[in-house]
Image 1 (cartoon, rainbow, N blue to C red):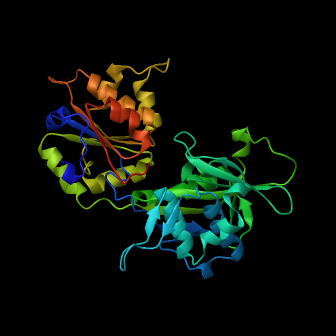
Image 2: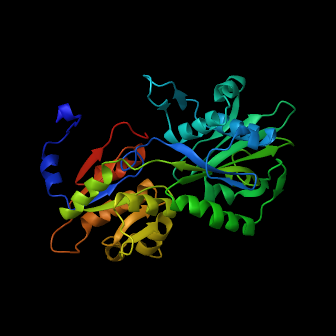
Image 3: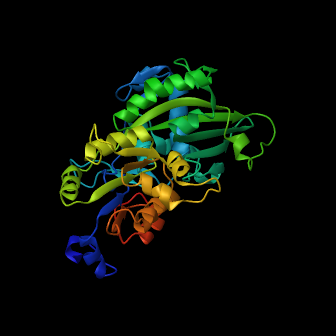
Length: 368
């Protein structure tokens, strides 16, 4: 097992795995390759089905994209040269941020130059990403006074905080609820249905005084949308066959992810977890909690038992949602025998579910 890079902490886990009836799997880096790249973009009223040429963008918009990505990403995320001729550049750090940095390079721009001009110690304030916020924002001081904040995150979440959007000339235009709904319907949902993760890049300028930085609900609003990008993370070639083998062995595979419902469903279909026309359930975390909790917010096993047998995809979920699902399946009395649940994951957010499972598989080369 060690030769196959399998580190077994408890030997009886091997026997337990042989009796598994359910697998709850993370998506990124487990079912997919965790080799991300931007393949589509919506910038200045135009939906680019491939990476645009820098000549297609006005200088103001190009600069905002480059700065918004280069500054508002962890400086530990970077693209390194390939280790050998013919290989792909190496992605170090957060793979989503590496995809965005690769997008900057595809636009023939240099993120290193931006970071040299704005080193990490010059960052005024950073609102780091977490599973609740689902966004990251970085504030810098402007040379002439005031501040600029760059934000990025799940497109539908960031767009709800935008009241303006840049047009093709780089001018900020009003962005109303009906405009957002139209963008979701015509741009974001089609991207997601192709299995792409969509991220929105935005900014906000503060010109007068010292804003109330601790009041996030006030700070992270009135944003101006710069661009929406579609990020591809290909399914691992071996995954569809592996899931088909699990199905033949009577093992149900469920995917639990933070991605939106359309992206998650598309990836699950490519993997073979969901088959078009079947009666399986695909839910977002918010709806999942609404269905399984009582008016006091407590999980009711009876309600959970009505959901989990048909549930195949849990999207926009938190680590707590994944733990709740795993615990609910284990504690369920539906069926003649107790379910034996395995959990696979590769990020720190999978920790609670991995610990609760009958057997947990922690993957290396991770998103952690």
